[in-house]
Image (cartoon, rainbow, N blue to C red; front, side):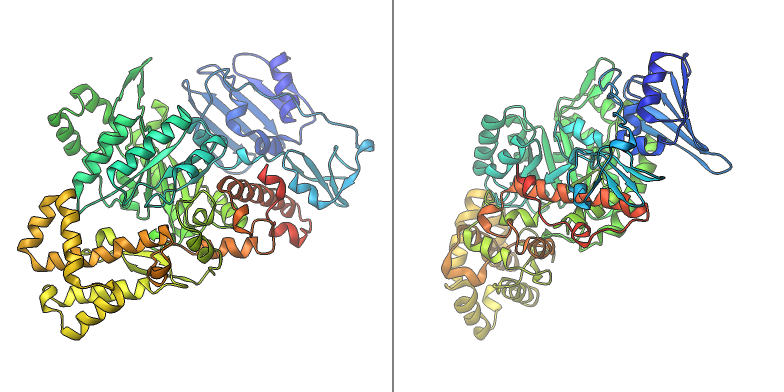
Length: 617
């Protein structure tokens, strides 16, 4: 018997522990399953040498863990007289994560029953017996379940925590127009979580200010900036990437993409090279998708055609292009369900499993594990209470992303009027209207319908755009309604202001509008769609009925959850407090599942946990 094997035996409470390089220990067993849940399989293999195997045996099941490289390995699980399976694992570097000391096992005679509310104390282990829960060791009679400590850092993927240098697998996603503000990004980063600045729709000068402020406040701490696909103005993407690379941004959230563009690939590959024999990619892309065909483009290496274009332009070298063929465009792909803003209204429970299986197929095909690359799939859209967050993790999400609910937080870059409107929203108070950035394409965004006429008015403008050939062909009565009820000014004035904007932003658009009456009408109508979100952010009282407020059903879910609690008042809704409350509730529900799995009754108040005040600390 070796000290190493004996230590692992005490830690796992397995029946037998065997190292292929020598060392074996045996004991009574009965605790391996609970120990796997508590520690995770990668932690058990942390100190394995390359090529070394560890066998754990207990009650008809055996686990064989093998380290095959510096940061990856393989596990084989076999049941006596039953099935077996094998899969790859991401492992911590050798000796980087030593095994913890075995948990003390007090004698049953010292144990006392505790109330079910003890499940909310995430750092405390619990022992479930027929007569209740015990908190200081096993109670009398047969043990039904061991409920290990469940810190919020145990939710999701440890690989995500390591890759991004954060303490929670929770991301505050980008809300365009700076609604996901510098204040929001900085607050989340200082709390050890990732957030993304909402750069979409802002001028490059405004985005540059945000980059400088976040860099000054956070240094090397984790933060992210949004890169919104702009099929109408591809040069905006290119210039935004230039700005990010110059400003030291290391992570971007790529959203609204239907196909890869040279801009997003150029960001990903900037600085790619070899370090210690491993491919080093200093820039990360988090892609937000709602279709498997889009997810596949991000999971795979960049297309050869784009690589050739980047080499020809001098953005990357031939040597870098060869390395690029071995890495995915994005290691993190967020599956977006029914969300605010751009959305396909996909059901998360159907979409997430499909893209997770797609991820696994591509990772195996590309042999990413041999190069220490781990693809992660996140979940976003519709997450507004602990039950929905817990469900996302239970579906296999490596991380979760929130959006709509963050708009009502004090750090959001919007007006108090909008925050109040959002705080009154119910789950059915959302609607859709034409997307400002993809008006001519007929794309839609999901917005708050309660308290605003924007969706109906914007849709009317789109219908007129479809039927008329230009501003001068709009029937007189219809034109009068547009000018008096929607624009509140003559269309000639709107066009003059629009023309001045495009003359500065992109004169090519103005030249096209002068030749194409229908395009001139589209740009004029887009003035209303663009200004409506600005009126909302600025809290323009005279234009409240025209507010465009991007919002999904998660907002109504969140309001329902916090009603009557300390998180209901708007001043209490800090983005960090909201994140901690959701994660704490999701961790409680994971412990509740273990209790229910043991056949024990669960108090209703724990089945739908209210926001825990301690989560705010």
